[in-house]
Image 1 (spheres, rainbow, N blue to C red):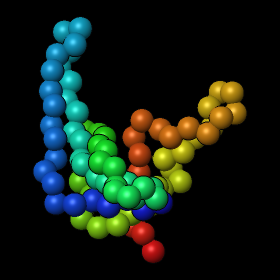
Image 2: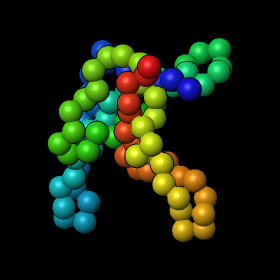
Image 3: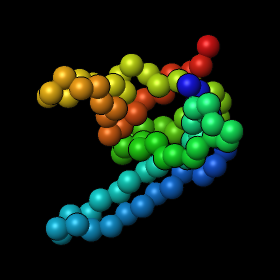
Image 4: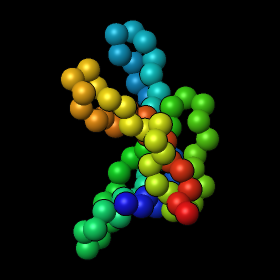
Length: 84
């Protein structure tokens, strides 16, 4: 599986929930998962993370965790590693 980051701009969404200001920074990317066309998805960058430069990536092992029932999960924030 490879993930492609392109030159698309970062999406910044802001709002107020329960009286608290929130900001969400998202970077578009494409996952090449064996289908005829890659699927577009959004990477949550968090508050201080720098955007990924354009290029090919794979999922970094920090993106995975084991849930309370022993199931494999992908975290709310994914991390990318440069493809080799």
